[in-house]
Image (cartoon, rainbow, N blue to C red; front, side, top):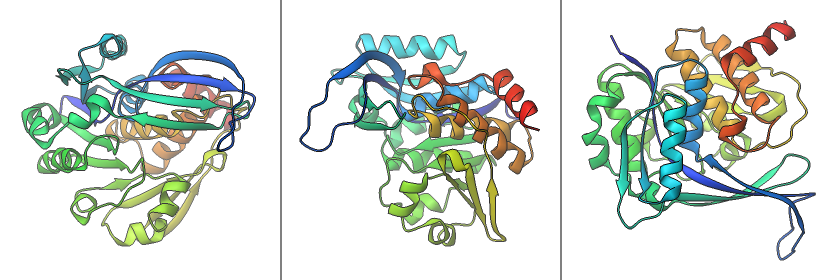
Length: 296
């Protein structure tokens, strides 16, 4: 039996966040209202969301030998995430994300991969024993695709469920889709990749499209099911999709019914928009359960 619920393969960044009344148009400068640094990166966000849902969670990724890397290792420790799979890239800085956030909660993000780009299939092989201990293997595309494929192959070999968040959107090789059980793009990513139905036809599993305040759309061989979410007043949408993915992975690993797991993930993602930042905004399970109970 697996002694881990979820193993997340992915990126860890230090987010540099600037708030303004609105995001600038191309070529325009606007005055900001606030600035802060916070832990982020799609992989780290998803691992924290999984851990805060109560899942036994591990993280596999790369950090630099710098203060940002030390800060992110501290986040992993604080949330009791197994960090045996976190490597160090000498001479390569920890990843950064430059994030602009408007008063409407919408964001614009530029990611500088840094050490994240050093995660290779060789690193995955090194950490294969750790990955094979998990019931669910979750990844995104802020790390090289060969590493993701290798990790999913390790997971598949032991019967784990593999979940891919194809972000940032890029061409998805058949080799990757062939080892993916659940694909979770947002609406924009799904459109770039040819649409949910087309994606579903390229794989044997399930496509789940996150749709912000509209919840999520599940597309299977049997048809489509829409999953509603809770109503919130968004402050910052950064990390909401990652929270959805990590929470969903955790609830699947914990044995929840898939539709119930989706409903939980929608609520967790919505609550993550009610606070500023990525990791700082990710809710714990008790908060999500309370909001779901109040909505029933």
